[in-house]
Length: 123
Image (tube, rainbow, N blue to C red; front, side):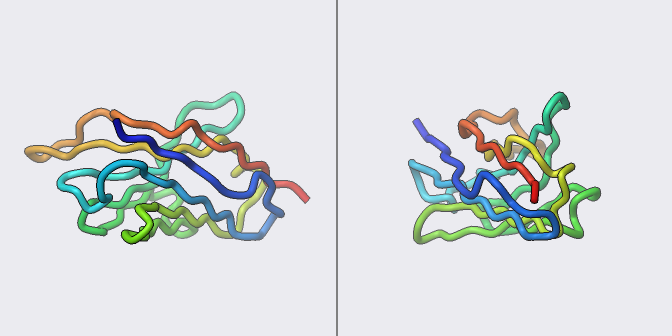
């Protein structure tokens, strides 16, 4: 069974760039037809989808975060990376990576999640 593990700094200063890595334990991340998403949950709020990267490397972003978000991958190390620039305290959240399939023109529900990593934006 695939495992996803998020890692990165727990504290980021305002105006800096947040960088997180999701390591995928099983199978190459280029396997058809998997998409890997970054999702976050601010304290006391619901889940917010930030963007994803497809098995072919194509990326899609939430319109509200697109100008500050970059998702990339390292196929040699089976990792997905999130970068969020110009962070503010409103970016404080638990950040998750998750995997879903895409079949026949639609996404399946997220079947695999990481445990999440807390990121706090503070000086």
